[in-house]
Image (cartoon, rainbow, N blue to C red; front, side, top):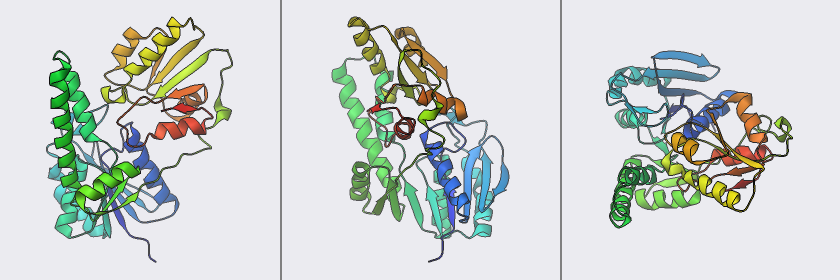
Length: 315
């Protein structure tokens, strides 16, 4: 059977988050096997590069782009690239167009799939409905919970319904866990498959541990956002301190809006900011326990990375 030619439209690619990491690993997998792919993503400037069998085409976001998360933006003018992207797809002749979510890049990919009558594959990476509900609840912190909770639940329900409607455009759906896959198959009536993940066990390894000072290190790696439920770490710390435990610290790797709160409310927290490369692999290996308090993540790549580093995880 011939290998299909895939045009890949990832919403996150150059940013630092789980979706971008998964997208890059996917492209690297394709490249290592010599499969044909055109990867169209967003960035600061429009440029094209070729790496083996993969054509990377970056489209610039405009100055009117709206910040959403650390590095991630939504450009209301992104569809201005439609003719340019269409030309690239006509040259590449894809058999499948693959989108990763509901953002400017994927909207462009979905439109071009419809225009060119090319089958659309959509993978689910982010629980936007849960993110929206939790961030809205945070904005209304001054209201009593009897008001916040029903409104938050309504928002979560409506955003999920809208997302499912969007995913109905696809011929096939991929999801990172069975629960989400079942919801999407039932809601869209489309065929679906699990999108399995892996981790580089040479890069993430217990051999990269460098500390042996007797201090017990709890750790977290990821974006510091409300939906990650990071304030639970402060509760864990307080509980340990109340029990007279002292020889420990929390190593928190990442950036986001919760950083200031964590710095003000945790006595033992070491906030490293973003880490990458060997510094990140070493940070994982130096932990004794990895804590993953999020209740909204679809998969949790960092849990696999912790395990590969020889660190047990509490999820």
